[in-house]
Length: 183
Image 1 (cartoon, rainbow, N blue to C red):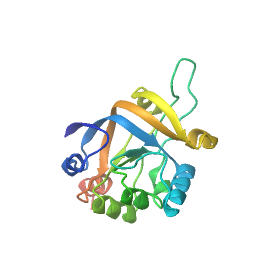
Image 2: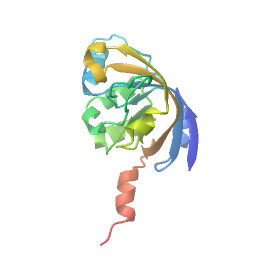
Image 3: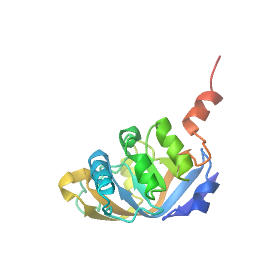
Image 4: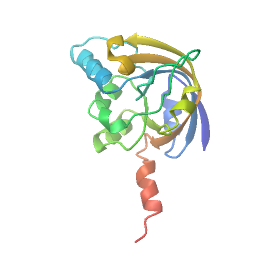
């Protein structure tokens, strides 16, 4: 099923999503990879605020390449998500409702998605130049010293995504393996 959603995500939006749904996401999302996640977790553990209000927000695992002249951002394809798996549950507990990346997630993350009524979307790896066309505005909001891994606020329009892990326990990767298993 195809759906159009706008951030911040609401609980009702997430509950309607099923693994395999195609979503065109618009609104504001935030970027973060390994180094930024380590810093965000450190802030949470110290009782300090994150660089953005996490309630209902979506984090995109991306380290965009430099922008070409006349462009606002370079290629912005997803990074492998499992590298953020040790950080994701605590971020979800603090309000993050969606994550965008590529590849499968560990069992603790899948359980946290269910517990926190969240969702994991996949963006198509290798399509970073096309994905960047959905990005309408970019602003570095934290840790510019991290270069491509700095936290950015992105304004997006109709970013094409696929629901991989839904809040009901659906897992598109596992379902696909079962569907096409030859015994």
